[in-house]
Length: 278
Image 1 (cartoon, rainbow, N blue to C red):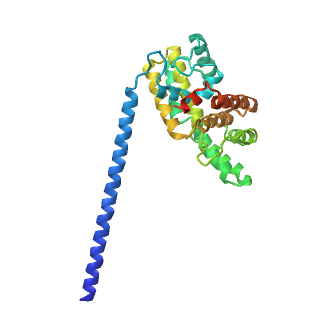
Image 2 (tube, helix red, strand yellow):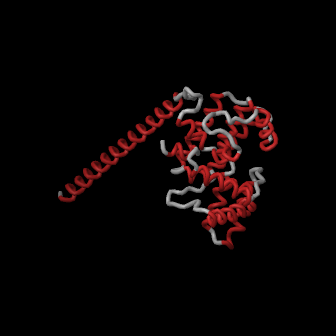
Image 3 (tube, rainbow, N blue to C red):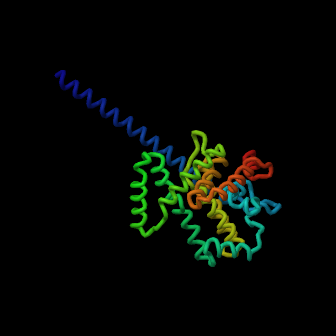
């Protein structure tokens, strides 16, 4: 009899445990659904935000999104409070044709899509993992395997050269600056891809390849992702620098970019300074 009572008690406790577990899961599901609904409402509200203020400049949020591409735009002397860059259309078309091999709307859209979905970050992430987790003697073999994995997909990216560039330039930046410090610092080269996608959208509008709505849709999409990914303008900008470093390996140009990066973080007229205080 005692055995039956014990079994019944254990069974009852198990049923209570299952019920509590289900209640917690249901509560969690409601929280997730509520969060998703809130994010959708925020997205809708942002999409309804007017493109321009009365004076013709962009709204606060849109200027923040434009500023996510500031590392590149600043050195070109382009405006950062309007969608227009203030460069001549012929100059923009020359830039797109000679530096990006873009001479049509279709090629522009394809390049923006590549930056948005793949970009150079697909190389940076596995290379950085190899450089930071494996002993020096094991890295050549791991990089060779990575090269082969990309080659099997028809991608002839220079993995070993990228790795050498990252190693040298990261060390250089750490020696001459306080880049990549802090517990919340991320290193993923996302800004190198999406920051350029933002500027391509602006140039595409100036060149007549994109409508204003198309360009702003892209800029808002990429800007939101970048601002969500980083906790500071400094870390956002650093990930443009490291992406450029991997792609180029040019220390002299990297120093020039770093100088612009410092200006953006310190100059009173910089959008990073102005928007940080809003």
